[in-house]
Image (tube, rainbow, N blue to C red; front, side, top):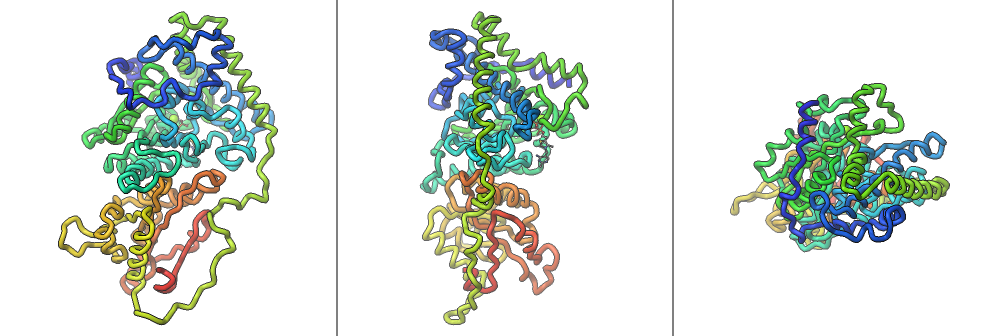
Length: 568
Ligand SMILES: Cc1ncc(C[n+]2csc(CCOP(=O)(O)OP(=O)(O)O)c2C)c(N)n1
Ligand SMILES: [Mg+2]
């Protein structure tokens, strides 16, 4: 514990980082109108005019905007719990303590940057252009909730127009698709394939998680893959020292998340640590992180030390496992208090003006909540809309195989079909374990353990490649490639080895369309072989169909051809 706070007390020297304005994000231009109005009401019309730095690169106007947005965010956290107590909402998970690091990233990310934020990022979203009312519509489970049409829990963000990709609930599971999206943006740009809205050539990907989620294997897979491919993705670890009730050292050996990733620096990753409650340090770190990824230097891992001023969620009571002393100590390090002190010490705020700001924020939140809570709920008749792109009833009857023409083995028919499809559709990319041909000219090449992809890499050198030996990475990055605008056709070497990718398939890929109310989709084809290995000697782990498990997943279509014609 002592070590942790020593780090917090060593702020980064932000002014030592020279700023290249061509790499700057939205900076002071984040959509701050509603916060500006609160500030002007409280402090007069001229207060936002000055641009002189007051602390680090930040002006009084920047810091006032941070305060107003953070205060709105905190007030929303509290209001959501009140709504639940009143029976007007069902769940709440607060962003309290994470406001300043969120505001800092919103300053430097652009609308065209991808954001895969976890549930604590309320302030990041407010500063990226989501209104309090839009957030409360999700709290209320309203049909007009722009994130999910009332289908998801509160704080499960997703706003296509703002580059916020729909988020699911499993902790850390968005990391691999974040890496895949960063890879996909680079790859599609190189191939000249149009990027999906709202991505552009130099978009970066922001992914955030908590300290506990770093223990998830998929988080490690995502970071390792990003380092391997030099993907322009930023992993922000918002470390509040707890995963629900579990202290950080149970999840992270030694309790220092940045130390876990330092070894990746030798391969081009930037590993940073900052006090995420300090506006100057947070702004400097966010700037550095975004600039590094934007310049295509590689991925960034930023460990931000933050606080948690409310219980984990509305179903948790933190004084059951945290001492009053610890809670009081943390309350004294509240980022809002810190910001208020900075502004008071500089003579920008006093008792009266701070109170007026808080009253303005409370009014905004109150009015938004009142408007949202009575909004109509989803129509049960629409429950099955957007489960998949296809109509459930359009399954074709099986045709008898066409017995005319040249006999061909199924795998070679597949090979030809893939080649034709790739010629016809520039978006198709093919990857998986061993699917590439050979890196040395003159050799026939591998082209898959069943040779289904043989020759494809020779024909389409930049559209076919070997993945790492990691199935969650294959399907998770396929989600990202698909979100970028490509059409991934990936191979899982044997159906039996789908299991490591189960979460990516079931929780991420299969739910994308439904959970976002049709706003986000990630079409892809996953090819898997089963049944035919070594005359039956394959048995367990090389031959099982698993069709029972697969047929129960909503959101995917299973195609199981019995003959070469159908397969192709
Ligand atoms: C895969 C998975 N396991 C368990 C949970 C339940 N759960 C939700 S949040 C959480 C703790 C996360 O802690 P941390 O990553 O430190 O983030 P924090 O909430 O502290 O910001 C757990 C266990 C989950 N959502 N997903
Ligand atoms: Mg935590």
